[in-house]
Image (cartoon, rainbow, N blue to C red; front, side):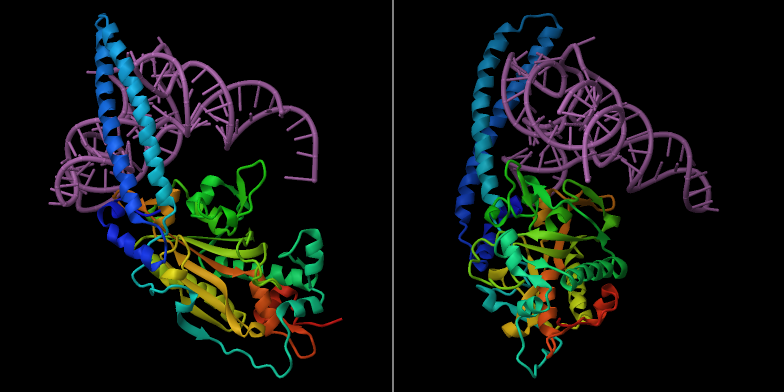
Length: 424
RNA sequence: GGAGAGGUAGCGAAGCUGGCCGUAACGCGCUCGACUCGAAAUCGAGUUAUCGGUUAACCCCGAUACGUGGGUUCGAAUCCCACCCUCUCCGCCA
């Protein structure tokens, strides 16, 4: 959520931010709603002040043993009037709130201005895409061919955009989870968490998935619960309503969870393979940081995700998302894209964002500076990494001419030291 | 599923026969000060948030908040209803 005071005092900042994001939200509408809200609030508060004072007088009379009947009759009317106005004031407040909840975060000054993904800015490339001396396959062909991935049976069990991983593929996925979690918890300072995979409406609102993006979520019937689209949701909301100690910062959590996404609006995109599934496992990193330190923490998080790809020896590039391509709650986002030979391109495998105080406002997460008043923490989140897309990259980049698949060296300790998956 | 207890500041906890008890007793923590070479202990002072008005900002004034939402009343932490959550016991169960 955006700072209410900021919009009131310098609406031009928000106007520019919204223009940069190519948002259609109208700030003038806010100003009208907020003016109404303030007018009604001032009015009803004045009446409440009168009512409170009169009630005290009634109490005084009763203590003195005098009759207060005449005052009480008058107050009854005032009370009715207040009730009426209070309703109107509450409705006006709700209108402002609703408007605010639909407003995206303000991009950081360092974010390149641009309309969509074509104007993202490359930061660097690491690794050299491999040259193949044989006709290579797409990752799902490799996976199906080696008996590890079964999209047909997943279609039977559920529907499209699901997969069954068996044998070596199931083990590879488990190896990736362990490799990622071990890296984050043993070589970095993340605390491992197993959160609920379904959360309530308040939690979804805290990180910004609701109220705007309900159609992207899977919702339970008869329960006001949602399947999480990313562990960012439960991990960030772990501290909803908390006031953290300054000494606790930076504070990091990591979790491997399934992620559930409806993929509404992506019909026809990435229909084959592991790239765009309704359910996938992802290791997520979440950090709570001091405002002065949060962009440094973002760099560290990006480095953490990048290092995983380096250990897996997968070529990637890192880009800065431009204003028009950034997510709703982010002030700055780096995407890491892994090389997929069959698509002859880099595809997103990690997205690391600094949401600054946007989510902290929504979820009410603060920290107490030494001797000072509590203030909003900054929240960050990043993928580190999803297993499905990583497997897609491994299947394509590590396929061999004879149809076998090499296991990346870093994963072998997690794979009973298997070096290669042979075709049967 | 059955029975009971409870949700009040950063934490613990009092108030709960409706009205100078919500800037909320008391304790802990935290901040500042005294004592001390320094520390501990001790003593003293301070320490809720949000919104509105006002302001350069602070102060100040007003309103709201006792799990959440309603109700009764001139007035609700306190009485009533519904819901959520936590704990204890019993039952059932992976």
